Amino acid sequence: WIQDQMTKPISSHREFFRRRVNPRFTHPMPIGRSGHPCNGMSRWRKFAFTRADGDLSWKRHIFEARFNQGDKYITILLNDHVRTVVESLQFRHSTGSIEFNKEYFMRFVPTERVGGYFYLYTDDGSYQTLLNPPIEFFPDSIQPSQARVFRLPP
Image (cartoon, rainbow, N blue to C red; front, side, top):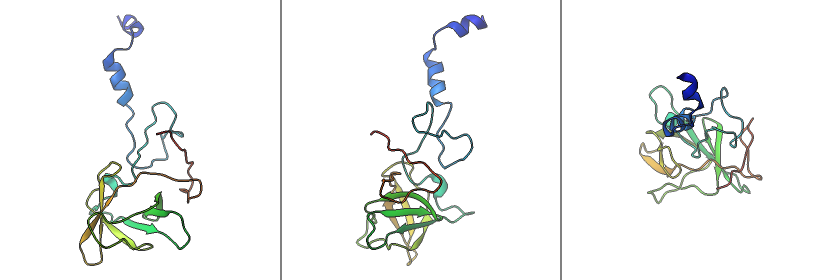
């Protein structure tokens, strides 16, 4: 019976299971990670901030948007690690603008999708909303340390 089952074509349940048995990592892990986005069954996230990056009681996450005169891109860091670069960045529902080269604490848990929300505490104790940016690096932008960057087709 076992040999007979093994020779049968893959059923839709087995195909469904096999496609989902290797879930994506919500945060970087050096072990067990596929080395290239084109490898079969690799999982990669497209957004910069995950649930693990929110306002946690045991760890405060520090956001910074670095931009210097003459730079082409704004570098987004979390806890001093480069997450992505963007061409523009602004608070979602405010006339004020984000101050570059200043540290902000994360608030709440980010929405895990490109265009989802993440939140930063401001100096007056309130918070501002921003959109969760895509992870994107350009040939002429800063690159994440110790990482290879691949441009995937849309």
